[in-house]
Every structure is written in C-alpha cells, then in structure tokens.
Length: 239
Image (cartoon, rainbow, N blue to C red):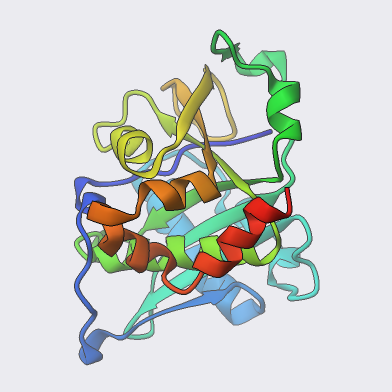
C-alpha cells in the first residue's frame, strides 16, 4: 500500500449544478499521448508548481499510462471543461494494505490488516487534483469521482482505500467519514509526496456507502453513482 492524500476544498461538500453548454464537462481515461499530455499539465500545475509535493511530474504519469492496453495495475482519468484540462484522478488496483516501517505507520487499535484484506477487493484512489481555475466547479470533482467509481465497480472491486493529510485546512476527512462512510484504519508519517503532514488512512465499503447515501442524501448518490446501483448490489451478492 502506498497512498497519499486526495486534496479537497469545502466546495466538494455541495452538489454541483449541471454544467452549461458553453463549458461542457467531460471525463475520459488517459489512454493515449494526447490525454497523457493534458493530464500531466494538471499534475505539473497542482502538485509540482502550486503544492511543491513533487520533483518530477513526468514520473507520476509514465508513458505506459498512455497505453490503453496497460491498465491492469493503474488507471488515470482526466476531466475537461470546454475541452480544457481541469482535473485528474488515479486508481491503483489491488494495493497491499501493508506499508513499509519507514513510512512511520501506526495502525489503529482493533484493526486487523489481514482480516481487512480478506474482506473484499481494494482499489487505492488518490492523486485527485483540480486546476485552480476550476476549483469553484464542484461538478469537476464529482465527475472524476463518478468515473472512478464506475470503473471500480465494473471491475468487481468492493472497497476503496485512500489517505488525507491531517494538517490540510481543506481536508475532506469529515466529508469522507460522516457523509460517505469511510472508516479510519491508521496513519503514516511519510509517503511518496514531499509533505511533512501525517497521512490518515481510510477505507470505504462501497456497498455500505450506497446504503448510507440513500434517503436524505439521495441527490449526492445520484451525482456520484446514478445508474450503478445494480452493479453495486451484485458486489454484495458475489462476496
């Protein structure tokens, strides 16, 4: 397991309105050199120039990421607004739940990583970054999350794994735990990104999250996963 946080803003707590035709919002898998170049532009802008968390943006998205045949271990998705690159997210399939001791790992009391690993199939979701120009467009974040969730469910995965920075003033920790149902399993001090903040490790049972989002949160469920309900129900039956 090698996770680093999903930066977020408070705007992510609101449901986005439908994008206007003048700034049509689309999502796509990074599957060729053109989409890779567009995704790398976001990585450089946010994680290298703005955050200073990377020394080499190109290493984040190797050329193999642009090969549509090579998506067995990692997938990247790109959002565009009016054709302009707006944000990206990365999925890593079947990550190890174990982290090296050098990461400064602390697993919370009562958490059994072996038992957790046997409870389902995991995908690490991270590197969610939105260009500053589009951070007021909550629809960009929701579109990327929807594309990621559709891919995860289609592949038969049952759980998400992620991390959030403890000291990030825009941390999505509360939203992830109180609204979506992510559960804390521990923390680690060091990771791939050059940030001194501690990372809080979270997991999400997708089927249980759907149950939580029904009723008063049905609008959020529809925005994130409308049309996927049947596939999610099948995940529970196939466990």
